[in-house]
Image (cartoon, rainbow, N blue to C red; front, side):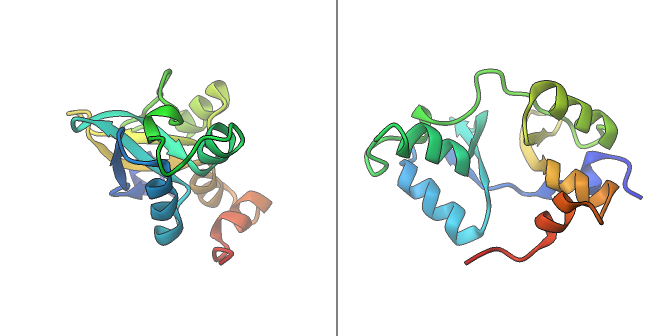
Length: 141
């Protein structure tokens, strides 16, 4: 059984700059079958943009996704991260306390090396749970 975040995280997360258009990020999410992308500014971690951010903060607000950039929609103001050696139970507690579904995983230099999601934790802790089964299922395409 996995003990730390590095055992269950998605490695080598996709990254985009804050000046990347929302449509480019949405296309990347579609093409890579991913629900979140790391946002950087000059190589420095700024936040995370999710498929939900694109819908709630861009589409629902009638922003033009071909013109507007990720800078207008990403989650990052109170960015919470964990390191690869964070115990899984601690990561779950952080997610619960902060009401987040994903945490960027950063190394000692502050570089994003992964993302851990509630689905990752569910598959590790209780593979028969509904969330684990949904997370393990093939994508709807």
